[in-house]
Image (cartoon, rainbow, N blue to C red; front, side, top):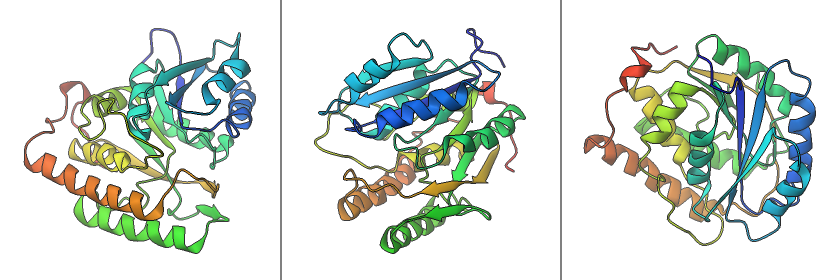
Length: 265
């Protein structure tokens, strides 16, 4: 599995009003990956930010062809990630939150697993050995309750569906993101929008019997104004129901032939 450009790893970073965080995030990505012996790229998808996020990326990455900026209308994180994944050139495609709440060095644990055939490596804050640092108790509790509902309804056995750090082998990423139904069109929204798009991604991976692996990570809570606990939780619960109804209605296809037959790990 080799990309036409010889790029091994593509990092997709969705960003909505992240002007303050992006300088440090971009520098960490550049510094760490410059030490690697493979070709890489980083794609920042600006989700219609109303601050200086896009201009910050342009300023910091001028002349560096490792970086690309995509300007989206403000349609939410799910559509921003989808845009970046489908534009990525790498053999491996890595989702990363703009705050880099997981240290960039942790990516070194994901790459070998994906290179050795794991279709989707899921960063987990709940797997044995993971560390969650500085997270308020109420946020952790909300996450656990939501995850229990997700496991009961859609993807049993996955302890952390919502972690923003995931690594895909290219065929799996392309197949999954081309077949999403919840946030697959640029329907513009107002204000921050946290959704359950990760749940749909993982549901398709399970439905198609892709090889999955949860990887314990170090994760630092990063305060943000982009999360509304009540509104966002209700929206994500609705997303769980919509995924289930979509499946019952036959809106998700059988596994694409290029994925072949897979067994769950």
